[in-house]
Image (cartoon, rainbow, N blue to C red; front, side, top):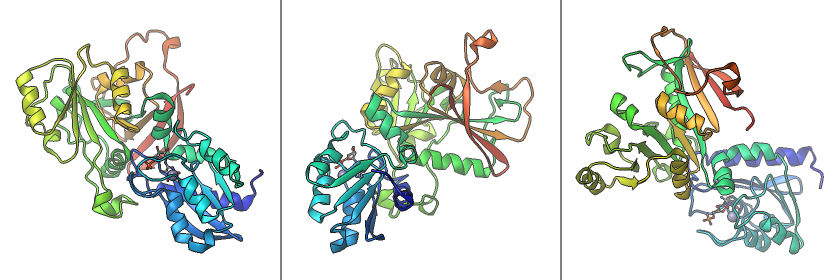
Length: 372
Ligand code: AOF
Ligand code: ZN
């Protein structure tokens, strides 16, 4: 099937709708759907929250009788399995939709091509791949988790124009301006988990929570749709102070440790804090695998140079988000990463810059390891 200009426009609208679920669908993917009959949009929908109806069913309800004979533009292949909700393929067939165009296949092994195949078997015209790369950008974490068993990992860093992140003393808070800090809040809000190291907790006592009001989070229509990301601290010997700020704020907390005081562990657990023991040591690839098993799609690492460097050298980082503030911190200040074994120019880690934009008085650089 070839796609014409109208097809592109309707799918672009479906992608726009899917984006409304940016902060709320977790651990499900963000999905949008548009139903078109005789060249006119007759129904629209997007998935809001796991357990609630999928995009297709909302669009079908919106269209009513006009769904009969319509074309459905969906940003993800319709599901054909019974999850928390019934299969969308059945909904589309019952509504009499005659054509289904998906932007991409569902990477969920329970679906993975079977949804479209089932519709085709029932005489529905199907196609996939329209605006695929835009649709993929909606759900980097869901796609990576389904395909590899690992989450999508972003690492957020803030630096001065001369590439430093903290003064020699360790003093580092508020490198960037107000707008960049709000931007980080939105990054946290879309993430399933925010991960840090015990060094950062001991040095800065960070909150690592989302403090935006619902008006700042498009799509968070009711307080019920709002969720705090998991706050995850890598703390091998359980050194975290029991009065650390992040332990007492609303939202789930997980401490990953390998050893440490058992009484302290029991006291923390009795406060509803999740403790995960990794007896052979807090190994980063294992941590990421553990998080994906708990349906964590997108991880945001907000940590110091040790953890950021280790994650980079372990090949776990998919995306670097670096805020660059317009000041100089001098040669005694600390760098962004501890990277060992880089001696020669040939040892450099190559990056690909994907985006640079100004955010208030700062710049935001998005980069990925080259070759990804
Ligand atoms: C769709 N449309 O809007 C979404 C889909 O537990 P459930 O029933 O919500 O199913 C979740 C799975 O359904 C999820 O893993 C993904 O494969 C698919 N998500 N599919 O047809 C939607 N959100
Ligand atoms: Zn579905």
